[in-house]
Length: 401
Image: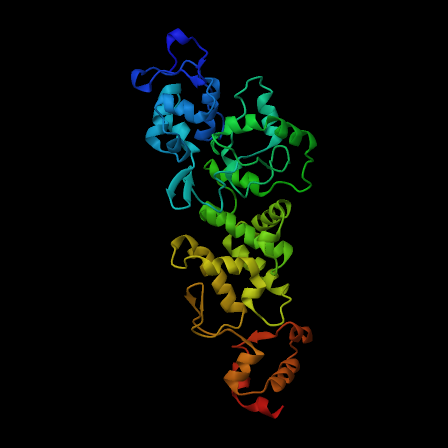
């Protein structure tokens, strides 16, 4: 807290800011800032340090008896202390804190995130939002929105501009010192705002992310998934639909990723049952030489193959996709997919039917053509109902064809 003898403006002595020891201070700060909509605690405290004339946010926290790392990780006791210093509700400060829950696991306002879905040390912002903030003629007016920390937030829905990532911070500047870092790159941000061109595609995922972070709900069943899983699901689904099963997400640009996520969210539908038609579309688009589920579903299958199949958070997705796979692809009885066992084979291909019924592949082809199975299916890996032709294939009559 600033002492009365210092007045409202702190002063420097030998390059060190002279602030009283927090142990001798119990009154709120005279110089404060207002908490803004969806502002993170680290943004708020960094703006508070600028308002009080500190060179770095670490200096301010040290003099105020605040542990800066606790602000960054959303520790409740520390944020309560900050709230007291500025006369702000601790609950409001905590609401958009990115709280550490474990190794590479976080929560924001009850929404689960991981190191993949949040970019903790990157400072990202919309240049146009920044310009609007500083037009309030206040050095500390620009503030960090919580949604800017999500890796899936790529386009500002207000200005249709791509989110800008600033260069990495240099010591002693903290990576989380929002006010300090935007001040360091003020001209760069202004130039980006001047040169930026609105994106041609409409922001689809970004409004959804804001809705989730603020505790709202949408018309989509995806709300039932934890936010980190929802982000990964709509991304991988969109990549397969928009760019093909052969495409790796890491090869796409930010603009293409934004496009894919928008497609994925819209394709997910309002009810989980709508996914079946989306999965059928992916299967029909298959260009693989054989009816292969993993190749057809590309990035989506690759991701779900690597998650913990016993984790209840994935249960809805894994059950839905594995059921579709068992109903539409040649999986044998007892085959395990995503931790789920196929109870009964429902689809055969030429190789599996030949092995089960002792019929050569050439005879099987003739049989299926006689049954008016579309000829073009033989070029991309024929698959047919096991139950529909089981009696005829097992009768031995087909060997006479």
